[in-house]
Length: 454
Image 1: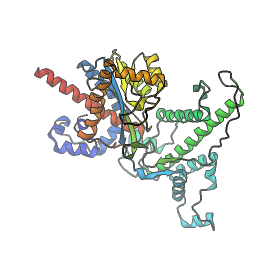
Image 2: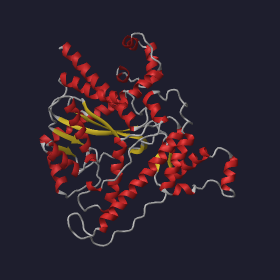
Image 3: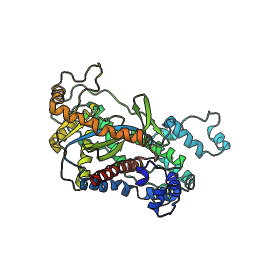
């Protein structure tokens, strides 16, 4: 924790400071752990380390830094430990894996004959063939990267890379769609959302072996296509019934939709969990870090997502905030939740107000530029503009500039945290929560100094 608070986050940097820095030597009792030992410790106990966030929040509450007030929610884009130039399509990744499997030119000549040799094998054009290819490739190449790096961390991570993964199969549940709006696009979007949630619930380990990451990337693209097919088949079955769920009859037949034969899209082969996320001047290959901060600049919740926008993050972040506070034994609820225009999602805003009974302040318009305002004539947007123009609404919403925005300025500019060091959504989440824990502990430390001085 002291290393993260002082801006030292790599295992080699921690080892070096344990030799050279007096404060580090006092903490470790003049013991100098090897950087591999530090890395193994973080990997083996990453879930426990992420859970320390709640314990630190308890300390903040005891210090009087968690009070009822306005909680500001915001996100920032942070680069991942991934090369943005290796977002490959299915064909590119498959051909590289095929080239690994075919180890000699003689074997290629026997199989291709007069063909070029860069065509996608016929086996990879059907879901059954692709699954069988993945199994064969893992069996033949499974040992290729096992001893590649001694820092591939003995323990849980090594076991995960050497044994076949037992991740449950994804199954699309159409019962979550309760009304008739949205058409086929909504069903496909819901299938994609459920698949992403499934990956959060059962995360895949990101191996240091390139061939393992290539196979994982192929499986990700195949799972995306399978989810699209499942959503499409469920929608076709729904339309075949002849009536909507509210009893009305359908109009004209739906437009035909045929999912592609081969998975489309791209996936990063360095960190398959990361995605290209737009920022002000382009794109960054990484994650969207989300925080909820109170008026005392204490981080109440810290999560990460790989979605490029904040549109669907208001409800999950409010739930995460209340869950963290409940686990920390804090019975005070926020007086209001404030977020910028990127969080304008009427369904989630209604859910927070009706289910959590917390007022929501979300600006319907982004910035003060002369661009046309969204939903100019809609009652909800006009009502929210009126609320934010009132003295009470303006005062509460302005607190965002004093709480969550300075947090990101301090994290990126002062502490120099502009890139995650670890790969995979679970490891990245642990790293981000450790960073926010260090921020909260710093606030507690300064509060104690100020109290003693007074």
